[in-house]
Amino acid sequence: MNIQLIVEDSETKQRLDISDLVQEVSWTTHLQGVAGQLSFTMIPTEYNFNPGTKVWFSVNGQADLFAGRVFMTALTKTKTLSVTCYDLLRYLRNRDTYIFKNMTATQIFTKICKDLELPYQVNAESSHICAPKTYDGAALMDMIQGSLDETFIKTGQYLFVRDNFGVLTLENLMNFRKNYLLDKDLLTLDFSYSRSIDEDSYTYVKLVSKEIDKQSGKEKTIISFARNTELAEKWGPLLYRETVSKPTNQAELDDRAQKLLELRGRTTKKLSFTTDGKLDVFAGCGLYVNLKDITNDDLNKWCQIITAKHTFKNQQHTMTLEVLL
Image 1 (cartoon, rainbow, N blue to C red):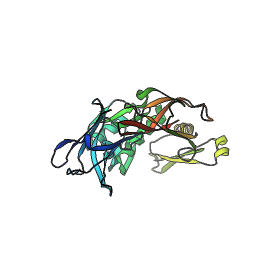
Image 2: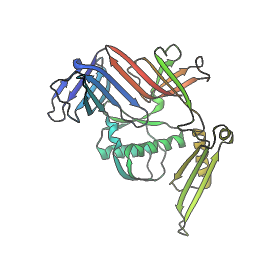
Image 3: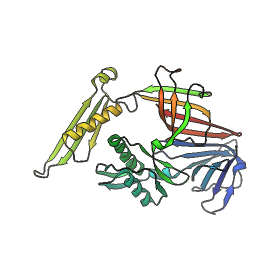
Image 4: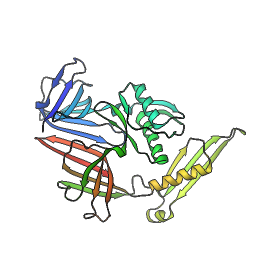
């Protein structure tokens, strides 16, 4: 395994290959809108990693894994220099004000990338027109993710944003299923399996829509309340509330509430494990899981990777994955 780490100074534009100076490299990606991170340690030299220095990381001369910029450096007492870099998703943390009307998630993603002058590519189109939405001082990624969430709820189409070696791309989750089987034989190093109703599980859904009646000029409020009585008895009153800005009627609001209840009325199951690394695996990829032999659940299905951390050290490559079951 040969790693290649190239840097280009943000001030001098000097380009250097620091591959031989690096002691350990970790590359981490997340499924929903968190910037990809490259961290590495090395023995300090006379070279100064100025903020904004460009960084490219590849493995074996063919797998281009990361392109980004230096955001932080730290020097320890043991004379080890730590460098932290982020990819283009970091800039979607910027906050701004937008009004979106009659736009799809694809169009919202495209507009924001153009306005920020970030390189982008659309590999997945959405035809669903999102509800009108006004954002005031909100994070750009929250705007994009909001449109992606609505698209998934309405159509079942799961789109996500990733940085593909310096290009923000809008992708369809279904296009990244890998031919890997996760079973008890693959869990060779370490694993943790958890079940939770503390994150995104609800037994009640309340939706509120407010709009101005065109004839009377008065505000009209429509409320929809969906409940799963059986789950409420087991879990208690876990309420999800949302204000819907798109003009709607009672039937449409009831349908949306019921779909949200079906989506949220389930236990969140996660599996974290460490195993030998594979270069084509990142957050958003799917793999087949068969863990019925080591859990009380009949886990035998396709699952998505929500966090992937690759570590390269001493010619060894391992990865720690968090999978949403």
